[in-house]
Length: 294
Image (cartoon, rainbow, N blue to C red; front, side, top):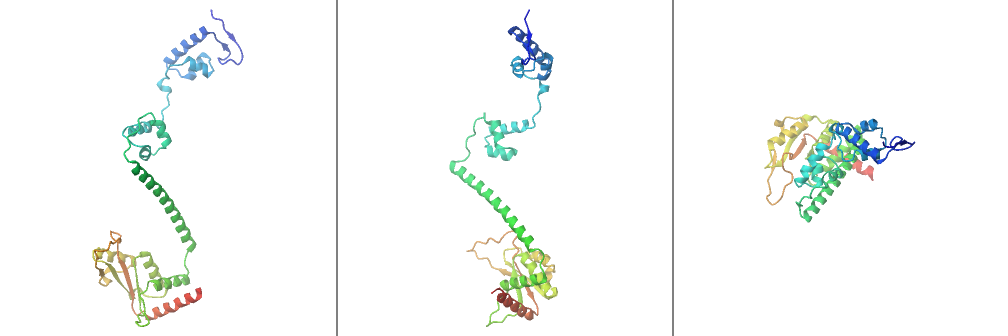
């Protein structure tokens, strides 16, 4: 009969085992494992509370299926391996699956590396493009932040501020008046819808009735003239039938135009009838702005 002794602090729960005792425990542990018991159940059944001893008793015995916890990333891991076998790089797999490259590396590092699909020069060009895309994204974010900050800083305009802004805007974009060729009339042209809105708000401020305003589109002959007239008519809140005949610019084949496509709407020309007094008032206001800023 095998001799057994108990002593405090022994990893077997106070049981000091001989070789024969260990083999008996292993037979029992293996039998319980094959019956489908978990490590905890076997530990409690045999009163073996030392993990090292328990590992030795169960060495080589696979855990039962019911004890295996499903891993949410199992399907992602399997997909990553499929993509790697198809020849994808870590970057491509990351874009496809949205997981980290460190995880991808752990999942597929035993697989053969794919044959490079790009030359070293192409790889360098791709890396450069990715770097520029990243930097451009940062610039866009900074630009948006600065624009929003500046917009908040402006706030609402007083009538005086709008008057000064309108005078400055008109004087920069006006039809030029010469001392030898007086053209004291309000005529304004611009391709930016936002500038047109500000100019109309300024005309409202100084009391110009919208019925006094005439419109005309200036656009390249190859563009969609009718659509452009309807676009500007909707912007200014007028009937397109009130627009004067469009001024068409002839295309010069020696130049390369960039203002093309669906977003190209040409320029809008605005005329204010009986506007000599308005022109003189604006001219005086502009002189006042120049004098006040000196």
